[in-house]
Length: 237
Image (cartoon, rainbow, N blue to C red; front, side, top):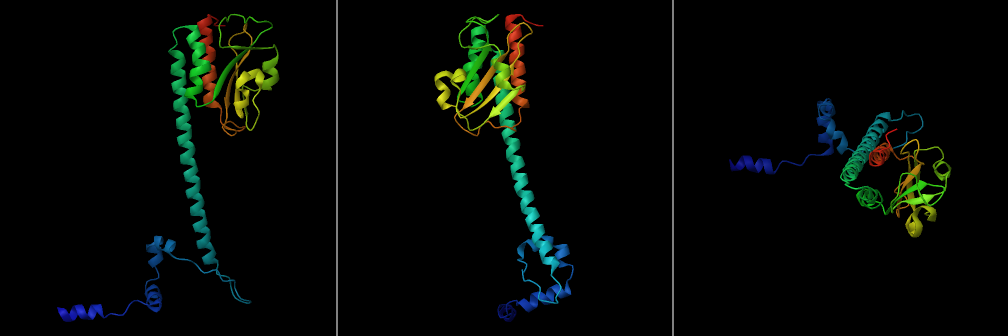
């Protein structure tokens, strides 16, 4: 027993020649164990004049690069999916808060105060066009008045306008304009006989809102607000 252990202990370590001999005797080794390729560092010698380039090593490197790219893309997709789910949860919570309002002034408070907190923005403002100080069908504080024609001028024919790296507009945010570095403006059309309106969200983060971002969820919130207004004002037209 002791002699057998002694013989094993005295067995010389495997050499590079042993590895080569093993691979020569087992040509299907990498085929049966493809994970072993990830442990190898292929050589990068330039072929000498008259020699054939070793394209196999380049293919291995390309496969490694492709794998890394796939991993990075997958990571980005996961992060984007998580962000979308988080945004969707915020929108759902905002809708529920709007529906919980028991009075019209509570509904306006939910739009101008609660939505800012729920959507993680710094300021939310509701603006309605009016020729004078009175807004048709609406008489409550918490709403800013803008001149007729302003909505079309600002929105440029869009239902949602996202802007990054900006200076806040005082006509929208009042004294809070200095905080705003990015914004999203949502067009709100309540009814045929009411003036158009804008729901503005401003953030001190210059990159929170930017052109090209998805707007389907925030536009859904805008449509909910329109329908809530119609219910409160009995304007189903």
